[in-house]
Image 1 (cartoon, one colour):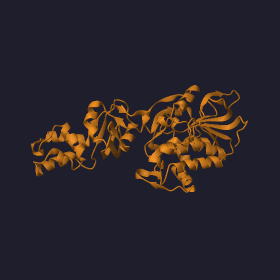
Image 2 (cartoon, helix red, strand yellow):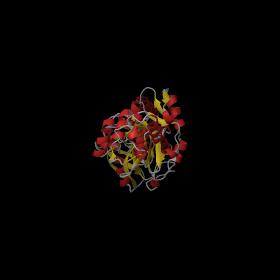
Image 3 (cartoon, rainbow, N blue to C red):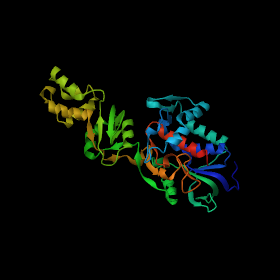
Length: 399
């Protein structure tokens, strides 16, 4: 589509990420004139860096239970109308080879750029125009319907439908901003308070001093907080804790909350310690513990309890307290690493303001919000991309 001298278009999408491109493709396929604008120099930056560069593009087990929102039912319609299987069909049509990792996570065999190229090819086929390095400076709702949108360089479009797909606050180094929330507030739409999610925890100096030497150690763990639990890998870092189980539980954690960690879900540490005490009382406590935990972790826990002595000289009460730090380690993170490393943003545009079927705002006809900017946040493992595909597709059917 040649935009030379053309000011009036059907659909303007703000944000050339997963949701925005999906919406643009669907609208373009319906014959709508579509322009996608993004302030970044390259499209789909989150897709590019996701999944270690291989893009965890969906999860085969996607269901509404995998999402967090003030309105837990809001995501149901979009997820049903455009499913993980629908997106996988698109991937297969483009001959992109993929593989399934643990817990239903689907990744490209080669590169995340395959998903980006697929979306750009679909945009091209649907006659969608993408304008990068383009910042919006002003949005005005027209009295006769539609919107006048002006860029910082003075370019202007008049559009019938305006789609906000510019994401949340997570990972600002790739261009994340709060612009989508700013647009919502401009039109009187409530924004649920936001915070970093799917993000590592950090410790206070005292706890960090105890665990700093454990950086790089990983274990299978069950992590609990606020009546929610996840069993996946846990990784000690030089600042605190990371790994899939920690990222998952961080979405349910609020400042000041304690978490409980089972560092060895398969075994009862007290029973192992008690049995070892009877079998060989001269062996060191940490020697026994290192049979079920990495050695450095076993040494840290025993040192914390001051049990640098033979297990036969250690009372059962002390062993039980030690075992609690294996199977029920209670700790309170001092915080998270914040938006700098968070994979997603919890909170966002209040779903009460939106139609769950079309993503259109109820009180501002022609204005749509899709993807991460909306108060719908998925678990780790491809769910947030599926929300982008599903919400983008839903809006694309009607804009």
